[in-house]
Length: 352
Image (cartoon, rainbow, N blue to C red; front, side, top):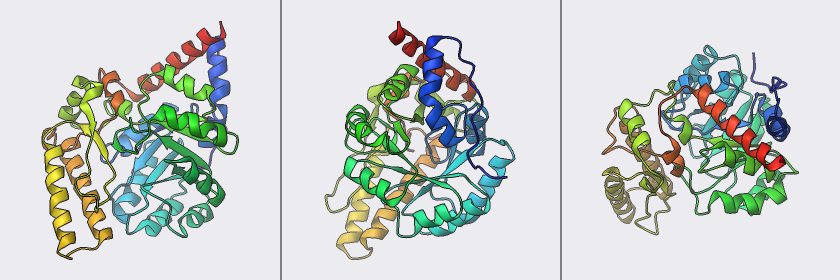
């Protein structure tokens, strides 16, 4: 069995808003093979088999966060997810992973229908390898120029993610990116908007602007099916938007993509890590690529301390600014249903 896109199940639309929502989501849902065009953001340690399967079973599109997984670990994670759902789901791969091509091979062997590449431009041969395996390629596009380059290279869909998102972020807000990029891209391929989306009204707005769908991560962290530690979930429920802050780059010679997370002592630890790595660069003990990889390994470990071990003071509690809209723990299906109801209601009001 493969994750080849299938015709999405029919959404029962009774109100004008529901009908308009179904029409606007039709393209994205058909591309993903889902009932609704809601992708789940890939969050390391959080987006594993249980949450991914729950989101897909609820009609959305779950995405496994490979992160720093080994080839064997990803192999087992995909198999375990398949045991929990027969619906389509994707796999998010980090472009700088040293075993990227082997990870792509694992996705091909399992018949994964959609591979999401994140973390930079796809390395030479990666797009071709994914497509040769029969999967669709989804890439992140932080600028219009890069988006056009990716379209020319043959990607099948794009995610445009603003700085309001959790985890690694760019410098531009979601609303500005959407205004700049959707008019140029929406007629060429499916574009999913991400970053700071916490309610259905925002989903309706981006669909009206031409988006094929949306991607949400923060809203799903406190899903009942999420394995995140109770401390991690409590931190989300208690937080406000202003608590989710971006990390700072300490040394201009060491390009570090900012990370948005809840403010805690972990931020000071990251500053110390940057000093350590910059010192190693000064001494010639590591090359730039290795230095960047050390930073990525730091984030993976800091995130695990928070998500799995529950150390929300010294670990990294990555969260988007929509965290203020996370108010309780609830099933993934209820989260999706609420978002869809809010979006339909918004479109219903606009039709009046």
